[in-house]
Image (cartoon, rainbow, N blue to C red; front, side):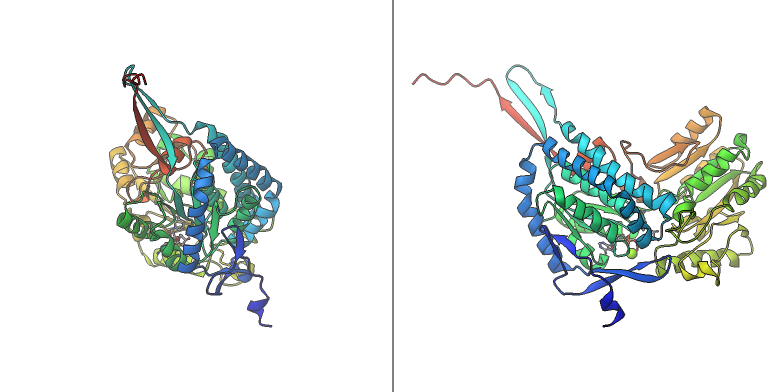
Length: 496
Ligand code: NAI
Ligand code: MG
């Protein structure tokens, strides 16, 4: 028996059944911390997408007819069941993504449970409006599901992002075909397995496969009535192009190159320095769309701040994602690892860039056995460099000097992205002025934490369209308003 054949195949979920792909082909899933194969998943393609969409369409009438709170109750049961298996789920996420168990993967499993609980609780809030049009005219609106939703997610926070599609789409009465990322399908399949215990068959279908095959077929399927995508801006444009052919609504959560603007009044205080590291998401290998990857430091504090940042960041422990002592794990795959190294090489090759920490990953020793990158900071950067303009999706931070507020805002906004931004100052007036001037969907002042449930989250410019993480986001993204207008002024029925 060949080694590949010995690796277990984890089937996907179509129409309530756990199945292989129609073509019988599969994809190997790798542990990026060790570069070893851990499982195989079906290489879903057009035929599988057809079956999944047909199953979702068949399940729709029954699902949408259920009282919303009945659906919500199922989501709450799913939340509890995820919580029970959170440790197992966290380990699975760490193994397939390379994200450190303690700092990332376990919290992500907990977040997934929270997401189901949050949306399950909102089921009673899917309300319409009533218009005051006079005694004889009743006009009210209903929030109706859109139909079969096609959702596509990336690998960086696969279970959290999967939950962010499943819970609001199902809560509002849609049925769903979700395609997991080829690099991280296992945690999503586990969520599907848990969901399946509580949901009627075919309401949720989860496909594995490549983007160009399963993803593309899903995005162009004529029976899919809504597309919800999280991933790169490049693929987001393809999704929108497909959506435009059939005029279906899209939600796009795409990339970013988010600025962190540090005013001189905060000096080099630890909470700011640590906040910059957190905003940069170093412990996620900076594989986050909201990473504050352009650091605008005022010239008065520039060098001292970087010294302090190097000191504090050096204590981050990089290594085996499953080791509880590890703060920061591995990059998802060879392609992304090479891409990140390419940016570092470019920086090292520039005579005008000053490396203040990190650099290329170690070529020998334990870290060379996985796709481990190291926190890297280039100083004296220019906002025009490729490193400063493109989403690196790796732990490479550029520090840019500023001295004039209008100029730093101009630089912060000189990007085609507009996802997140971070402003650091004890002067609230100044901080809010900057927060309002910066072009971003989400600005944090004096902190750099992750997304919060209940807060409408999403980007402007090429960082995306639509909002999903809140009640309003759910209603706008997954329902259509239907207005019903009733004439109450008709004459009495003639006497018979
Ligand atoms: P990607 O955007 O290609 O992949 C995300 C998802 O889209 C995956 O499920 C993939 O299978 C699917 N997909 C790919 N091509 C498709 C197509 N033609 N039609 C339909 N679905 C398709 O991201 P990738 O290649 O993994 O990473 C490349 C870069 O994208 C990263 O370096 C990063 O800059 C960015 N990215 C941003 C994310 C974010 O959350 N903002 C998440 C993942 C990647
Ligand atoms: Mg891609």
